[in-house]
Length: 428
Image (cartoon, rainbow, N blue to C red; front, side, top):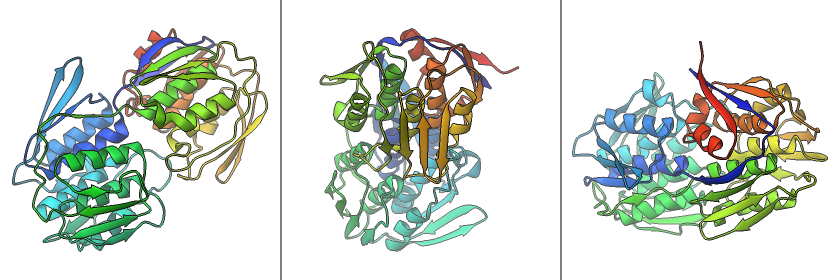
């Protein structure tokens, strides 16, 4: 098992290129089940979560090929008329997003058996909404021996109203309804860029989805067994969470970093928050420059996590680490996931002063953090510990970095390219 050793208290300088978005790639890979034609993806991030997703597709009977083309990774995926409709526990338990195979598999093949998923330890994150979607579309759904078992001769369009915004359930509904019989109206949906990108992909494949980017979708089911598919390659959009992480790291270390291959609009709330803290952020067409070299003090900035376009929950832990060295007190309110303050205990080990009650954390800025051994508990918590290590005096060991490898491509290499002193070592 790998761990990172980071010598901190060094400002980041230089340019970093952002990889394709994990949260876009995973549902889009699963959507390839809906077509008999080969679906080609470009700018595929090489992450352990993506590897797990591809293994699941292979387990289901998909033909998967990976190639390096034009300096990036491409994936070619094809599903024929027959499939192994069982997504086994051994694979699904490693990645919560595996639940995304349920909708397309049920819609195309009329049956699906998917293990209840695992993933990060940041709360229950129940799959109830996924099951509700399938039942609203006419499927018979049971849970037996830790597996979701769903069957339907043909899914039928219906109205679906989510009690709260759920990215995964919205995406499940989109994939399940696009080849259903009749029209579906889905309300209170996710408006995240990754959801819109999935919708754009499905439309290119032959679906008829209206309302992308709004809180209501109207989907005209094609009433067919498959989508026609798309001839050209589908490019994975840049990872706004990776970009936000490097932006916060640049600010926290009082460095100057150009972040390339991004869509600045997707980072508006992060850019605004950084500017409030005293950082100079300059936007360009596909990049931003984060310049904290002349920042005399870090202003405390309160944030509340909300669905897009609000502050993303996936950047809450990183922002908390930044606020640990702010000149004053800030509050962080987590409205998306319970148990997403697990990283606080590890930040204590670096010298942070944080109190939390329920879903609100109060961060009391300190003059400095000090390196210490810490342990990652989930994907985004691990990113917060990396930022903490970068600003701490002395060396920090970060253990269980397999969490960070799920969502950050070559993070140690990219940080070294920005002047950080980072080593990846093997546990004895």
